[in-house]
Length: 109
Image 1 (cartoon, rainbow, N blue to C red):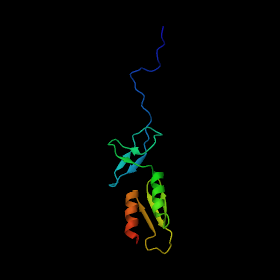
Image 2: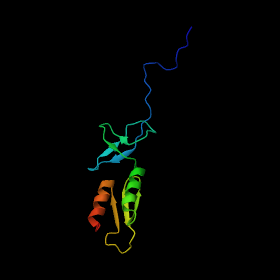
Image 3: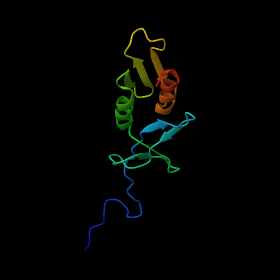
Image 4: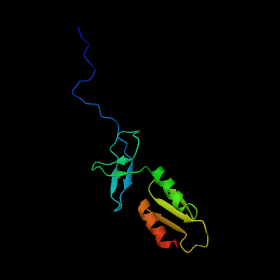
């Protein structure tokens, strides 16, 4: 006699999804559909990928950290100029690409 499993075998196991969200260049919301705890970039249903916010933050700080304090609020990207007399003191944008574009527009680099 064999034991019957508690759940029918026809029900597949579905791993929990990551769910990390990101705004693309047009501010459309993308949600990661990979398994929770995955390594590497996030990926949405269309195969569009993006790096984790902590990686983006480190990259932005590496480029702009000498002149600006860079922060990620969980929904917005912020850069505050270290010089209190700078004509453009703070930039706040929904995507890191838009933030960098605004910083380049105000930077004499």
